[in-house]
View 1: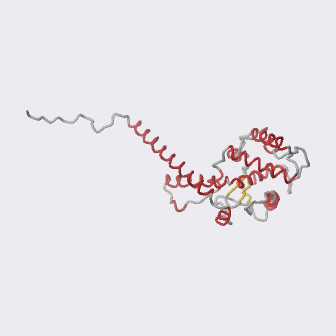
View 2: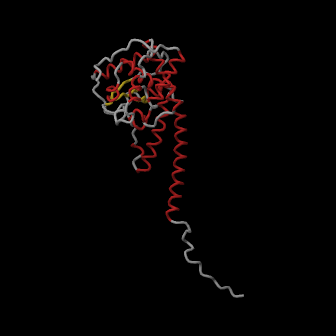
View 3: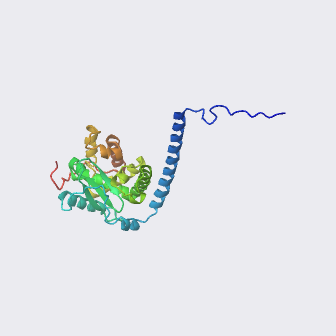
Length: 272
């Protein structure tokens, strides 16, 4: 029998799938792989950072300020008074391992952040929104709550991983990655983390003033106004919605039997 070779069929090296379908499959697959790797790295780094002692954390970040922070003058009265208020509030956390530092970010948006090493950032935009020391005390107490639960280290882990992936995708030098306030703060915390920080902050306020009157007044005003206004959008992007938060704080006060009336302490500077 004589063997007769057949020519391969036309288009044998061409996929039957449409090129757009193949491209979409490739993109989805790569995205899934990147997502899985990122989540795994975030988990590993968060766990590792959580076991870093507060002493090591304080030493590592001593004097550190994010590169993207535009701080006001160290002689600014509002910075000094906010630092004094943080010191008073922190005194009610007897076992605190931190020496808290306050910096005021010269930004119009309202925000507050707990960053590694005991650094608390408050924006000028937030200071323009508060109308009493009691309102500001709760915001600061909430940030102290994140330090107590070490939530800020978890946020740091997420920020580092996402910055690393951004550097890889954009082709930037990985060795030149810097840690910005946005990297850390804008990852947000879970509802459980925010609830614990609120409960701790309210307890600190009660310890300082003997009541929790107007601790949530700032959020009451925000809830009654345009919640998506540019002045408060940044804060709302990383914190619970005002309406839910006010109700939750009222429930905590009722549960623990804390007074909801009492003398209001004015700000150490004229309210806007």
